[in-house]
Length: 440
Image 1 (cartoon, rainbow, N blue to C red):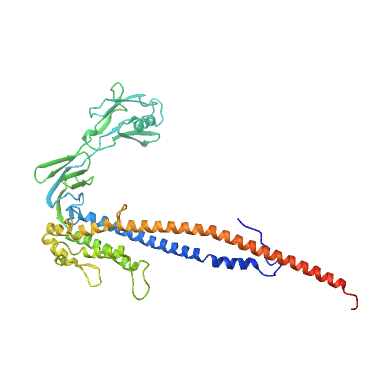
Image 2: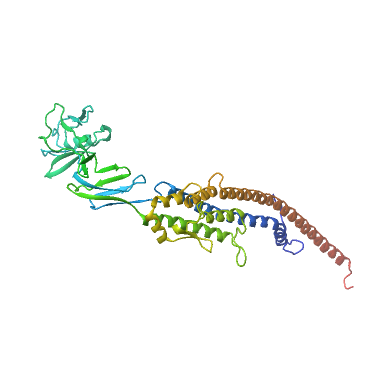
């Protein structure tokens, strides 16, 4: 919508600029709405950042509440050839491991060297028997060594083998065929379809399971060099050259790791408290954009009060609130208490509803829950308000467009009228001048 403008045609004034200035006054209301919308978007961005941090805090605390969260084990092996790892289900223990043998895959090294693409070097019909009770597999080739290797390696044939051609002389190659998986169960034979030897027979390395002896007489085997859950929650991994190695494995509580985990939680809480303080700052100086916000102030109080567990102070565990409204952890005090009674310390920190860590997890989850968390609800409410402001801004756009059109028409009419008056005045002056006698 719009109308033509004849700026200054009759008045000599820059009426287009005058209209623009009028419109600036008319748009004051819309400008205020835009400013409010921009402020609200800034606040939403701050709340979203804080919500992300509180959600991460809920996850961190939730992990520590789990059974092994604050009672981590250090798993060590006296020999690097026997690697050991422990999961959350492991318990303190110690035992010796003697490596009787490592795992190996079944392998054939065919004796006769032939040309890679020599026709007729191998039969066109072959039989693979995998010795695991499954039916033999018949393979067809083009009669060349390259064709045989391709048939074995073809995923469509599902042989479970890997074939490699090795150059041993000028245009001469030998074939190595190996089970893709280690272990005694991977044994196989590869012959011509009639059962005769292929390429002069083969040197065989039989597949074998890894075997270890725990203590003096407990024997364990594995098709690979990894023994998963050899004891509950404990996995051993053998180096390929570990045969004959004896290692002492120790699983012990790790006070340093527990202290580090709890310190990380305390630091995360303090980081969230600092963010809340920055956004809700009042008094002298720069006020925070969320000064006095009850949702954030309540969240701050609940986080800080989590240190006051149901059983009273945690000062003997090194966990306290300082006079600045932040949490502190005396790592030396915590390590000492943990070393004396790791299970008791964990219980006091992670007990449902009363434990410090459990309370932090609950507070953070209530605040950051993606459906009905208090911060989530605050963000949703402000986004709804932004939507209403945007609708108001759009309504102002139409209103201002109509007002500009009306002003432009008014000034255009004024300029037209003035132009006509000027034209009539000039005509009248000319007529009067013509009526005046010469020389009078």
